[in-house]
Length: 285
Image 1: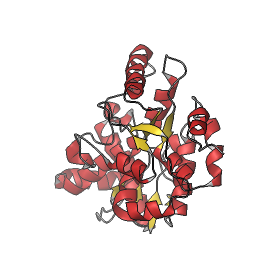
Image 2: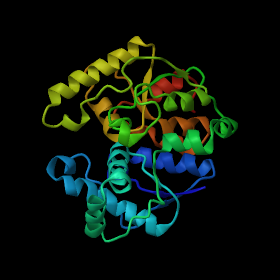
Image 3: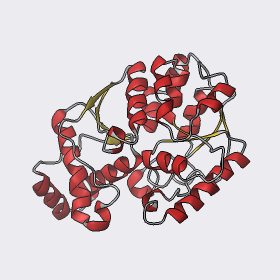
């Protein structure tokens, strides 16, 4: 199984551990990721508020690169990159002919529709399969109490994203349960963390994040799990209570469960160290 891989800006910077863990676990599961050559920023999260054309044309460039590379569908781990790439693909696939021709002319390619935009969550469940994943688990996450956090961008708008059950996504729960984690139910899985406005309105970001952290604790969780680098950073940066609730990327916990030795190198990149939570569950060494 092979995919074109689009890390986007965050996974080469503040979300480096998401990039490293995604590459590591997909390799362990026998999946080849081929990073796009000369990929460009998808424009999240500012292009769509500046120029509608730019917001579509930038991710369309990456779709054109993936189509030319012919390494399969386009894997976009970042929720914001996934959202903008899906929006561009939707405009090309379902938009009116004039819009499609304008995008093709701006980018300089002819859209074939052969490349679909995928998120690692849906690939693990729908293409690799949970039975395969369970068969690879070497260190079950028994005793690790978590809640799944999807945020805004994976599921909205539903008619474009077509991601899981838009009002009640369960794909991350299913993966974490397959790894042996104790997944708690809560009602905040798709609430906004305030990440996109965290710089101009830090006060709102802190309020939203503190509410999410408190709700996770109330549900009995010791950590949040996400698939968005903007959410992950914001959730760890804006908490006001101590000790804070750590936020894992789901791929990091996959790496722990698969027994990957490089997993220990990811924890130092977190703003809230997850080592105490992992140690309490017997998963640190």
